[in-house]
Length: 116
Image (cartoon, rainbow, N blue to C red; front, side):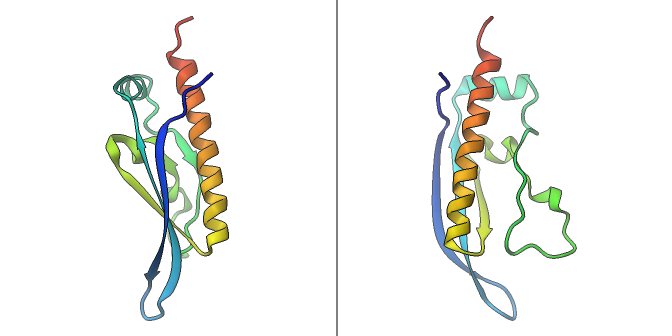
């Protein structure tokens, strides 16, 4: 059985844009890794593991989609990752995908670190 990662997820409204202001729902996530998890992530080279491919609601058409992917490195060392969604329904859907991705990563991390 894998231990779930310690994480906190918040939703809040953001008003952004110029000259036309738009309302977005910002979903922020912070993860707390144990010292042995950080060591395993660094030792096995999992820092660039992509957890989610995502496209924010406020993306410019000229931006590369790959630059918005959520990697493990974005969540290490107590960093807070913020992502803008257009509606509260899409924010809830994104939160579900995020929890599922964190669960898959925790399971993979436990499989890697378990002795044979």
